[in-house]
Image (cartoon, rainbow over all chains, first blue to last red; front, top):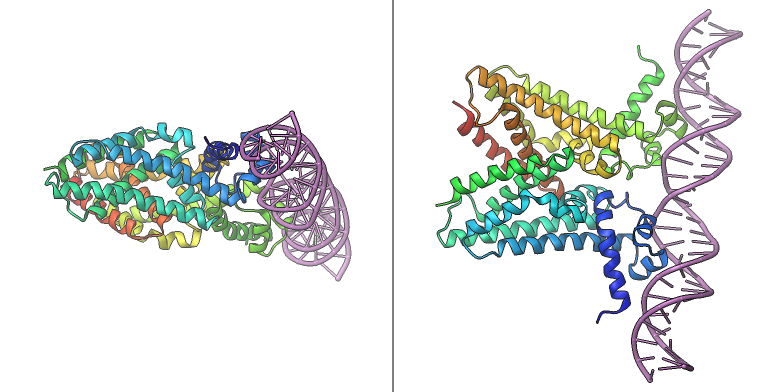
Length: 198
Length: 198
DNA sequence: AAAAATATATACCATACAGTATATAGATTT
DNA sequence: AAATCTATATACTGTATGGTATATATTTTT
């Protein structure tokens, strides 16, 4: 069984992750976190070296949650197209997923941390790279199995797909209008069907 | 001629706008601004009611700069397609434009202010709406003049175009890689040529 | 140029900030 | 259960924060 400290650490991260994601690194104060957790500074600083270390763990937990979800989605049995549609279907309702974690971690942290925290900015960038890699792998297998043909390299196509998705996420975030996701996903599904299916 | 105060106000906004855009509302302190301007708090608070009013003016100046640029681009003589390519050509090198103002104001403020400042968040949202409207108008004229045909309404198509552009801006911002813009614009230009030109 | 009006600098306020030293409570081991 | 070890609470730093009152420059008007 886990120790008390381990459970407390996990509890802190879980509670704190959406707050950092919503309000950003500088926008989140340690007292915001004592308030949300019901713990004191002693407990927070006993489990994490400082605010930055805590923010990083918070991002990592959100990122991991997203990456694991994507693994699940792309891991469904079937063709590469099945896997891609599994992914687009997820992003169509992405706001439901991000509700718990306080928004899209890649977008929020990637933008917020850009000029405020180099470590977090690098972490967000890394998450992008991993997601692109996962999609590219599916595409590559699809090409190898003759399930689809691509006009560019798998990684390049993965980047373009993810860019469009991230555009919809950005617009939906800035305007508060889910339709951007609905319409973009509809467009992407058409594109996948007509352009790369065979 | 303008009064001293008017010139000082303009100077403050100009100096402060990129700082707010880069570091966000909470990430920017009044002493950051006294340092950057070489002025004192007395001067800043003499010209602006408070930090929020200053941040709003700063965003508005960045937003106005962008909107005026877009007006110029869409105002070029020629067909609707000429105007659209004028716009895509601008976004291909968008980073040059945003260098002076500290990044994309729509993205940075839209994301940063989401949970930190309702006024700024609303202003970013409004800027999105205006940009979409400008593009939609060009598309509508193009349809009326029989220069192009659209699969959806002009506003809907404008939203989809701008979503893809914003996706590229997001990705370029988060990763620091301009290629997202280059590739997305290349894709969009193809799409405009093949799908809506006639 | 003197007077009036305005703009900026200085000095200050209360509060919030990240972080720490230490005391106390709680969990583990013996 | 006692002793030991570990985790959390309390109380406290020093500094930075947004904001203000007032004094001093600097314009602008007369």
